[in-house]
Length: 310
Ligand code: CP
Ligand code: NVA
Image (cartoon, helix red, strand yellow):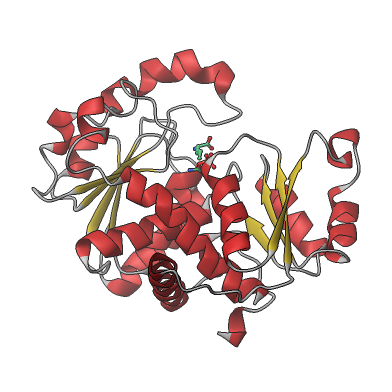
């Protein structure tokens, strides 16, 4: 446990498969304690600065509530209200905050900006979503899969849609814990090659498979877990109309999921657009666990906060 203290969590690639499993075990323990009403003030007196350059419901609430449940104090900072939007360098922000708080969570656009923040900060930096990754989401997703399936290793997860930030973190995380990973995207919307290389390396280490395809049926066939996300991420609003056309054949609907295992589960990080990337039939249907998944943001992040700041 001591080996996590002071580290950053910017990418699923910052953790080994074994470490991911350790974080999930701690998350389950913290979840159980909270359900039983046992308090865990392990971060008493600690503060977390949370910088948001994009909207959020789940990330903000889960980090804020998580810090309070651990006895700490969260500070909600929007880029707009802080000096960041008036041009204060990220490096200066990092050095100032490091002298006042015990950790920094940031949601912004560019991943390299978060890497720069982490480079200049003396306290742990946690990625609350960039254009490249959303690792906290995938910790919650893996926890949800483990809870519903009893295991991770050997399961097949299928991603259908945009090869985006959430897709990247899923590919790395799932591959590291021994899952088979299949990704179906339209041509031109494939995941980043560096991510595919990492996932490829991890799956070959386990002797599992990584499939990159343009065919959603091929990806979903035999899947234990089906995952999708919005077609236009935050910052891509101008491309929305074009993306709706390109992604239409990638909608997760009843026909598509009929190719998954009979007891598959459906995940979506939310917010969702019913009738676009997923039909109401699927997201509101009996295979969907999206609200358990959303709740698990809280439990997974409490584990991360405990390990990094504790
Ligand atoms: N899934 C997720 O990160 O949700 P928010 O954008 O509401 O934080
Ligand atoms: N891919 C989405 C995820 C939102 C939680 C986005 O970046 O907007």
